Image: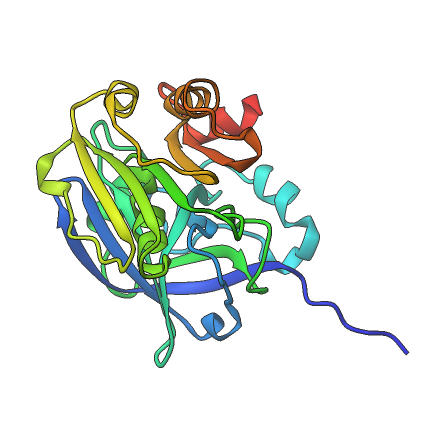
Length: 269
């Protein structure tokens, strides 16, 4: 007798249900689709791969019918056909009806994903590569059970993850949070039951602000750092070398790198 094992990730054919502007630089896009009944995630910083139509096309060019061979075939498609792939973090998942939210950063000069998000409207179609198993390797926020202080830093690209993490922290959990945005209009009211002190940094260097911060005493802190790769490396070094946080208790994720497109970043890895 054989036992079927579900693949941890699969493609989801989705369409835009609605959009909502969150601030000068942020827009939330809500996606729906029958495929979402098979979408599962227990994480708070769930990574996703979003495939957007090439400029001038209505459908994202992703050869999902090829199964495991989709990647090579997708890479070999002509530029004017191949869907644009970008990495995002799930902001929220809802049932009845099945919907997910993804928050986009709008910037100038606009890249293909920023341009798409700025003009997205109901019915626009995308493909999403996401989790079919609730506990999967694309979830990185995993504080040890003995954590007595949670340290979080993120720029605009990590704001959805930090928001979801704060919502999930238990009542009374001590947390120190720094969020970096370019425009004060992007500051949000974040819901949490944790004992969290949240500092918004507008046009301020993160390392300087965090280095000057007084942290409460903690025997078992856990740090989660995500955003621009260079800043992430600086902050990881600070927490480990200057604050004495065990490097095994620091999760760090470079979502993007200054001066590089996502295509260039993937090629460099």
